[in-house]
Image 1 (cartoon, rainbow, N blue to C red):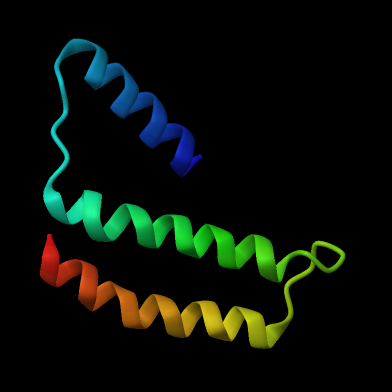
Image 2: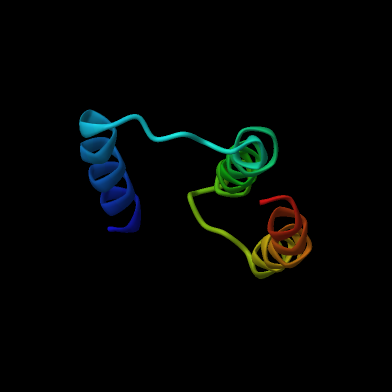
Length: 73
């Protein structure tokens, strides 16, 4: 539902007026989002189940990335 909300609200808003994206979003946040998506797909390749250690890796990456993104936005 979060993705649908972002897509609908941002899509409708951008139909009315252009929505600028900051440099931090284009250079840091968007590539990291794509990287996390790739990690999830890579981890889910085995019977579409994620193991605990894979979840732990994602949590640790998230905790490392949040301060990085926050400092650049």
